[in-house]
Amino acid sequence: MYIVLLRFSDNKAEAPKHMADHQDWIRRGMDDGVFLLVGSIRPGEGGAVLATGLTPQALQARVAEDPFVAHDVVTAEVIEIDPNLTDPRLSFLAN
Image (cartoon, rainbow, N blue to C red; front, top):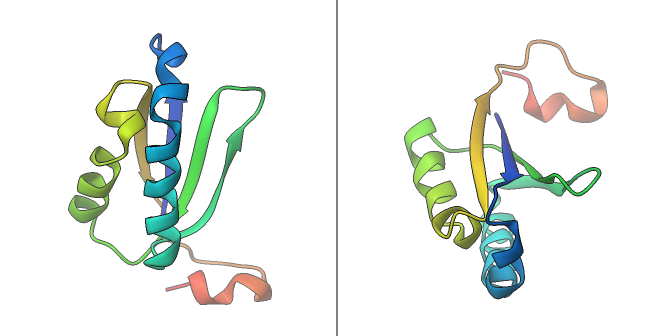
């Protein structure tokens, strides 16, 4: 499982130009079952994605396809997590 942090760069002002394509990228991730959760980092710092089901290399490739990443609107950091203990409601995430 992964947490992808998408933090705004100095190019944040370009976000509106790429928002529709960024939202399409998010929808594809949700539709593909790769993204489990997508949300904003408050206050206005960027976004975060909880992802699963891919190799680290495949996830890095998917993240690189995000128009916000491709146009330097955000910088991406991928954090891999190996869940050991979960609340029962999230037991599907445990290895």
